[in-house]
Length: 97
Image (cartoon, rainbow, N blue to C red; front, top):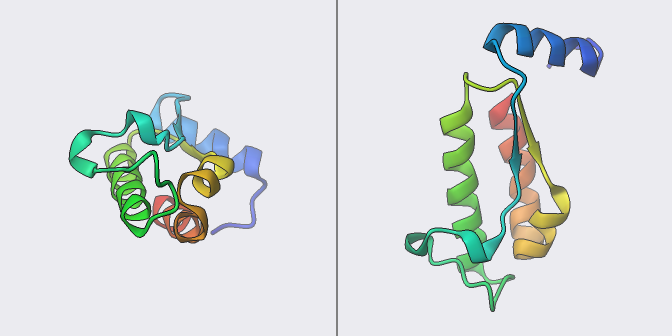
């Protein structure tokens, strides 16, 4: 990671990608595809944490190189699956850099 100010890094990313799109990562469990089997009634289960991770990993991979910014909504990570998903948020951020 560079020491350049955030605004400078964002401007450079917008220029490189040719757009100013920012993809929000907000894991609303009730909107997940059925094949991920996210259990909205048990949001802190290991199974739900795995589904959130799978879904967001896919989203970040699909956006890589196409958009200048990805913004995780930290509150959704904590509410979606507690500490398991919140700790994975750090991994998602590292992989999207």
